[in-house]
Length: 127
Figure (cartoon, rainbow, N blue to C red):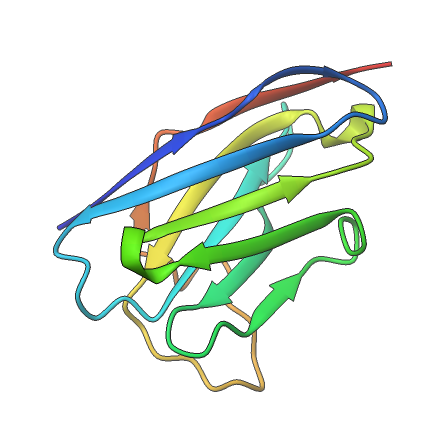
């Protein structure tokens, strides 16, 4: 099993920044990708950004492109989400996720491929 622990959420004013961290532990060997998802009240969980463990290739959803950046630290088995220019509509619970499924580079990981999930961290952006 893989355990994922998120941290870094909180309350921030619109236009501000936050950095989320996710540390993976346990049977992390074989992880192909990790990512960040979010779920706002009454909405489905959506992919925000993913990163492939081996080559660092990233995907960012259009809604956050240019504002959010996913990165990884292989030595620490950790991924990060730098969030800048935050908007009230970014308010949600943010989840870290991991997958041991290989996916061709022509496709991006969605929640369907993610097998491991953190408990989530709340991000609230005030207007």
